[in-house]
Length: 304
Ligand code: PLP
Ligand code: CA
Image (cartoon, rainbow, N blue to C red; front, top):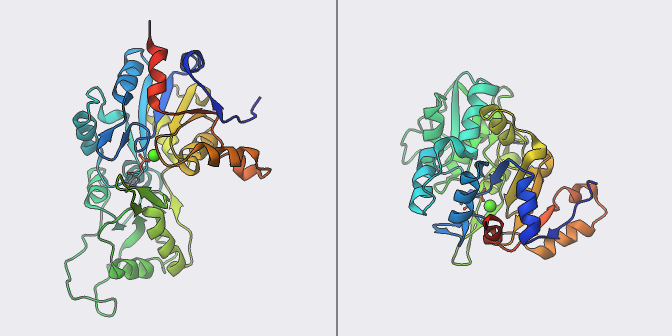
């Protein structure tokens, strides 16, 4: 028992796996959608699980939108029965961490998209309004005296000045250093890639000589957020479905959940098998328990 598998499953095995679980955690990008396109069969799988009375939640490292934007995205892609309470994003969980865990006093300097800032504001976490100083440099820009945390997430308007300011704030050992997630990059449908939050965090880690606390997958904190908002969450009854070994499968291992890798996203079977054959214990926790080609492989499990 506990020997991790990489086991390709289908039909009857998926049916009995689902029967043993009452909580299904879905990663989003690469599992139920790719960018703005729902993955074939995902809508039917999600609504069948909900109809069967399973608890379904979505755990995404994408920090660029507030949760209500996700509700709209779910709707737009045909997932019409998904509610706000089912959505756990790294931006929402960062807001909970700042508000409830560290109870930050003072302002938060945010490197990230407007959506991240909006999620923090909704939780009542004060963010520093980055004043528009078009010609300012680190030599003459204003620094706020009461910044108590720097939060780094995906930022498509990253500038040298933001990096420089954040580095200055982090000189204060009482200023916390958080990252929404540590994803290195994301695939685009064109075959190009997008650098992720992890690449910006790495720059700031070097500049500050500090290590960021990561909120998103694979950190356990997102699971703690879910456990605190749903009653009776038992890891043994949970199934984590994701497409990336270093985030989703490791998150499942870190939280004691059974894991399923879908092959419609970042990680492929060869990589999973390499880790599975590795002697390193750190590699074992990247190995999925089960593998399916696509979430659509779950559909026959709902046949009468
Ligand atoms: N962060 C950003 C900015 C993204 O674009 C994506 C995927 O598109 C992610 C994170 C990963 O999201 P998920 O955890 O749902 O795969
Ligand atoms: Ca993913």
